[in-house]
Image 1: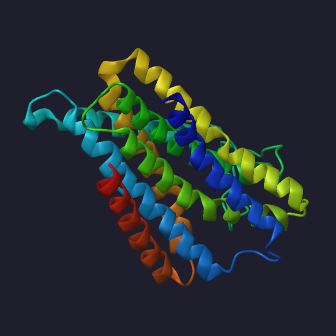
Image 2 (image 1 turned 135 degrees about the vertical axis):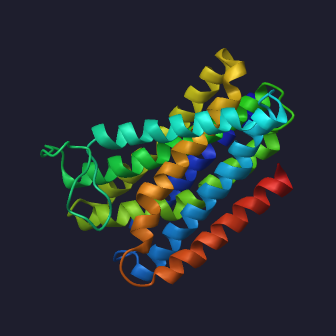
Length: 263
């Protein structure tokens, strides 16, 4: 069982690492059309995972009456979005296709452009790791609403969308003038937060088992915040926005299929 959990926690990180390795095989930046499609795909995966893997199980295991089963999902989601909002405000970071850093509270950051790009993706990856960890925590607690197969399906779905994300961050990093090796390292490090966040959620959930429904929806809120704040705006600016919509639909459907068939 321990080996299964370790594998599940590392699968999303492996997706980011493999995607970052594309910097060694691609000469130029990812074409804009492909980048839009991949951003939409990542958004679809994260929204579907938030609904089927996190919010629905949160309501099902709430232990409250049917009329009040929404409470843990609503409270946890609000707190999760608030947590990411706070991180967004206090951690200096830089999104793709912009030169205006965020999280500096109106001032300037001494961090380099490449480091702030990495921190932006790190903020994105944290809730994904938390989501995988809390679902595994639910399986460990013997909750009927979640299973190890369902947790693995979530980990696989996150890894699939992490692969293009790794490439999306490593290629622009190379474009800042750093070496391919350093761009790969930064891209990989941005995903290292995922197993850390997953382990944190497993530990907290094991200590506070009655809070598990809230932890599930907390992770959902954090992921949905990333989608609304970062992915959709980046995918919707400029031209070829219809490709991001198609990518969203593909990602949503794939994650839904994985969760329903394996979960």
